[in-house]
Amino acid sequence: MPFPLNSGVPDAGLKVADFRFEAVEPEFDRLTLSNAPVEVLATGFRWIEGLVWMGDWATLLFQDLPRGRTMSWSERGGLAVWREPSGNANGQARDRQGRVVACVNLERALVRIEHDGTVTRLATHFEGRRLNSPNDVVVMSDGSIWFTDPPYGIANDYEGVRQEPELPPTIYRLDPASGDLAAVRRDFAGPNGLAFSPDERLLYVAETGDQTHPDPVQVLRVCDVSDDGLSLGPSRDLAKVRPGYTDGMAVDEAGRIWSSAGDGVHCLRPDGRLLGRIRLGLTVSNLAFGGGAPSQPTLHRGEPHADGRVPEHAGRALAMSDQRIVAIRLACRDVEATVRFYSVAFRCRETAGENGVRVLLLGEQRLELVHAAQDGEPAPPSNAVAFQHCAIVVPDMDRAMEHLRDVAGWTAISLDGPERLPEASGGATAFKFRDPDGHPLELIEFHPGKIPAPWRHSDPTPFLGIDHSAITVSDTDRAVCFWRKLDFAVTNRHVNRGPEQARMDGLRIPNALVEVTTLEPGGGSPPHLELLRYATPAPVPGGAIDGSPFATSLVLHGVPAGSGSGADPDGHRFRLRGT
Picture (cartoon, rainbow, N blue to C red):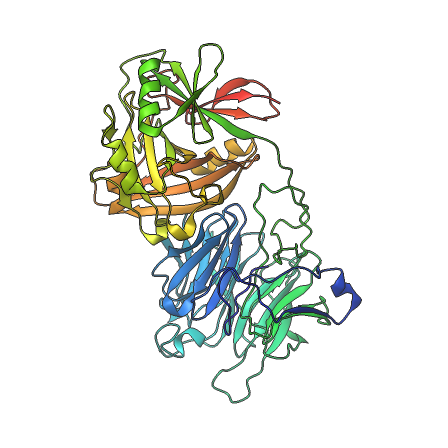
């Protein structure tokens, strides 16, 4: 269960010392583990809001609201800026298509961040007048979007820009298909956090009151949702959280309400009775259920794990296979020459192969070299659907490049040498080039604070191993659906954009925009798979050609389907070695 602590926070990676579970009812003891720590994931923010767990990315998004940036955190990638400027965005949620819907103070608007990073404004006015400052948002199972609109974000210059409100505080319902916006409740002085009950028959609303009043009404309220899901009944008081008040909240699968409070997190029964507290001695502003990579073999019960986080997929058992990428196969014009190149360029070690296949070890990852069945195919550009590269991890890019420059036979893809990508794109330094057969390769040096666990070790060699194979796809959702059938799970999604990306990809355009999706095999160890969907420039059609001198294919082991070979929807080949 990730939640922000907005005062007195220890350094990231440390535990909150003054923390305990405090049961008011025996039921609370069954929801907690006595040895579950509260771990600080990141610090240095002014005020945190808008926590949303992206389960298929295994990533937490949240707002560093006064600084006007949306942050992301994952166990694999650590902390990064996901979107900046955010317009002093506040609450956010995912819609039924996996897009992020956000409340934006500066624009006094409800917006949607599309999969390619573009922004669609969903609501800015009601009855000809500007909204105040949309605050929190939830999406119903029918796709309708419900949000609160108090004046808090325009009351001062800290969370936006001071402006005059034009509408009374309101709860709205938006039909995204028709664009119809309806005011469903106006009997709140300051509607704030929102959450539906599991059956969506109740909407919980944090009333945080008129902040200009010396003693504002601050209470958790609940409204009945109409049978047609279009309106709300009158609000009624449910509970008063002390100390502090309910700001953000989350509801678990049993209907229990986990509320922010002045001393931590309070757990309430659906009838408002207090079950217990997570005592932190610190103010919590918001919280969300989340945690646990989709590939972990965990029975998700909507109750805290030993790491103090609560998984998103409540009630689902996710089975983990032993599936993994055991090798990357390269078709070569001259296998012997390619063996010599990789041995010199990356200090690969040759090991025993079968049926005439030459096998090299680059770190602990295997390359299989076979004779190309065809000749003369042109090498595809980075945005071609036939493109596939291997990413080789280097601890020191300068040292790796110094070594590579002494090796003959390779040609550069990147236009100006290694490029350091912006923080929003992970901050890694990367260089793309081709081996003598035209196979695309990438050297990657991770940002010091974002080194994935498999590569957090000291090693004298300049080339540590293969982190992933990246393939260009025409349709990310279609590709994800395909690879999920082979027991791959989405663990991260982000967008790389800018001139650095264009130069790294060898694209002579001002800016490139690439949607990157990380897929982890069930077995967990590297290499993993990355899907690249180019929005700018558009993908070049035409599937990968098996057997051409630049052909790259994955060798998968542990797939229940058995042995054989196949291709993804874009023609990228793979071979199965069944269990």
